[in-house]
Image (cartoon, rainbow, N blue to C red; front, side, top):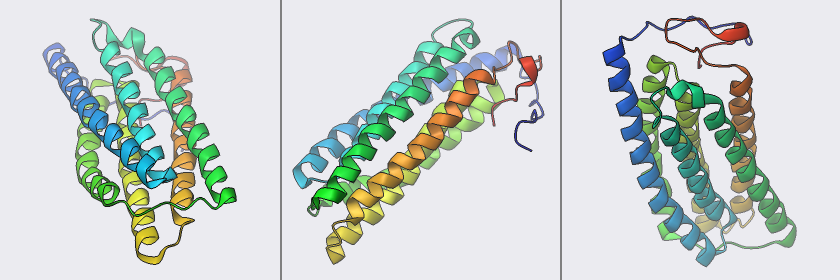
Length: 227
């Protein structure tokens, strides 16, 4: 049930924790590299096509870069768990910032009847991300759970969000291109904003639900381990 502590995972050895921490750094580096390219392509294509959803998708990529960078900063410290709450704050605020901007732009586009043009580049980008992001997210989540890092798990959710947004974006762009339903683009962007709010709230709750100070300790104040 919600609010109840989850059982702790098997405690990894010191050597295993070093391997897992190194893996987190590699995954974060891959996430930053991919999302940087994704952001540039999406924002450029979205601006050219006047697509709120595509621009919002690109901004989500920027947020993902900041989220991954926060985790990368956390794991540069020998005692990375001491930076856990700060990394979670950055991730949560990033989600809220994305939701606010995309939500406002979506409503503006709907009220103004702003019509997005066809974007082949956007469709291809969404399809590629739909294939790449689940793999990255799954690796991040498994590694974060084994390591007992709430921020690494939260960042995997940010990556998984990109998967959902890719599907929403792809559907919105295709419907707009095939049927000329202009409202599908800002509607897809509103879905992006709503999901970002939910994930931001989850990340913020993770700040209060403090992680274990050591892998073999229970969580302080009855908090749960990363979901």
